[in-house]
Length: 243
Ligand code: C5P
Image 1 (cartoon, rainbow, N blue to C red):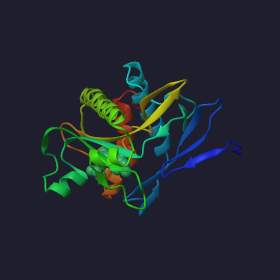
Image 2: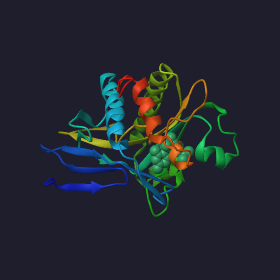
Image 3: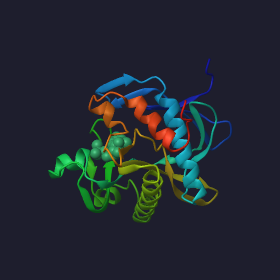
Image 4: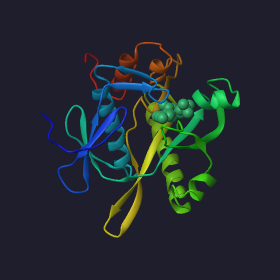
C-alpha cells in the first residue's frame, strides 16, 4: 500500500510528497516510451537501473559544485529530491549528429559537430515538444535572460563532466537532455539540474564498436535495451561483473 500523496505521474517516473517540506520522492518506473508515448513497453528492471545510474551521475555533479535537485537514493526505485519549479524546457546538448538533428539538417549520423550545440524544446505533449529558439524562451517568459544564461552554463558544465566520465569507460557521449528547475531557499533562487540523467535521456555509443548503449535500442526495435543499460552501469562501477 502506498499512502503517500502522489504529486505528478509522468511517462517513466512518479513524484510523491517527500518526508519534509520542500522535498519530493522521485520513483522510477519500468515503463519505456518513445515518440510521445505512441510506443510503450514495460522493461522489467529498467527503473532500478536508471535510479542507480542517475544517482551516480547526480552525486558526482553535486560533488563538483554543479547544483542539482538530488539529495540521496532511498531504495531500489526511489530517490529523495528537493522540490523545484520545473522550467518547461528540454535542454539538449549535442556533440555528434544523431536523432532529430541528423534528420532535420540532413547530417549523417555519427558526424562530429563543429562544436557542442545547445537546443531548447518546449515541453508540451500536445505539441510534441517543438524545437524553439532562445527568443521564444525569453519572449514567452519560460525563463528570463539571466535564467537562460544560467541554464546554458549548467548545460555546458554537465556536458564537460559527462563527456569525460563516459570517455573514461569507453563510451562516447553523443547527446543528452537535461531539465532545469528553480530552487527557492529563503530569499534566494538558483537554477539547478532536475529530473534524471540516464540511458533514457542520453545517447551513449561504445567508443570502439559504436554499439548503442541507450534508449535508441528501444526506439529502433533493436532489442537488448536492459543489457545495454546494465553494461553502462557495470562500466561506471555501479554493478558488479556478475550482477
Ligand atoms: O530525439 P533527439 O535527437 O532530439 O534527442 C536528443 C537527446 O535528447 C537524446 O539523447 C534523447 O534521448 C534525449 N531526449 C529525451 N527526452 C525527450 C527528447 C529527447 O531525453 N523527450
